[in-house]
Image 1 (spheres, rainbow, N blue to C red):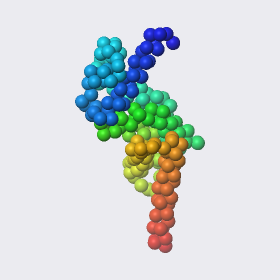
Image 2: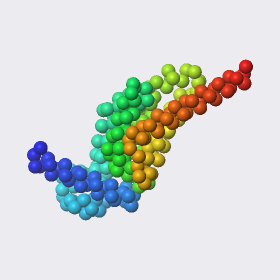
Image 3: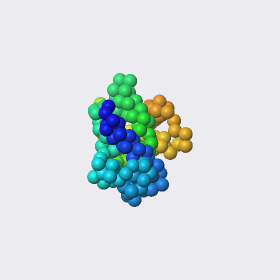
Length: 196
C-alpha cells in the first residue's frame, strides 16, 4: 500500500472514530463537518478531498456496511446448513459494533435502521412458505415475527453495558427461534386436542 493510500485509510479511520464519539451525545442531524474534523484531528480540506459533505460521509459508511452484508448473505438467513449466514451477519456486526450501535442508536439514522430491518427481512423470507405449511399463518406475520426477533436481540445487545460475544448472540437467536417454534407447535397440539 502506498503512503497516500495509508494516509487515506488513516484519515477515514480517524473520521469514523470521531463519528462514533460524537454520535454518543449529538444527534446525526446536528453533526457538522467542523465538529467531526476537529474531533478527528483532520483538516476540513482533507475531509472535502474524500467527501462532498457530512451526508456523503455518512452515506459512504452506510453503503460500505450494506455492501459487505449483501455480498456475503445473498439468500436465506435461517435455513442454510450450519447457519453460516446468520453467523456471518452477527460476526460482521460485532466487528463493526461501534458504528452499528451509533447508527441504530438514539442519535443515529432511522433510514439506516429501517434499511437494516428490510435487509434482514429479505434474508429470512426464503423458506417461509415451505416451513409454514403446517401452521397456516399468513406469511407477513411470520416474516415480521422472525425479523423483529432478530432485530430486538441486536438492539438489546447494543444496550448492554458489557456486550456479549457474537457467539452468545447467535446462540440466543437460535434458542429464541426454537422457543417460538416449540410454542407454536405446543399451541397447535393443544388446539388439535380440543377438537378431538
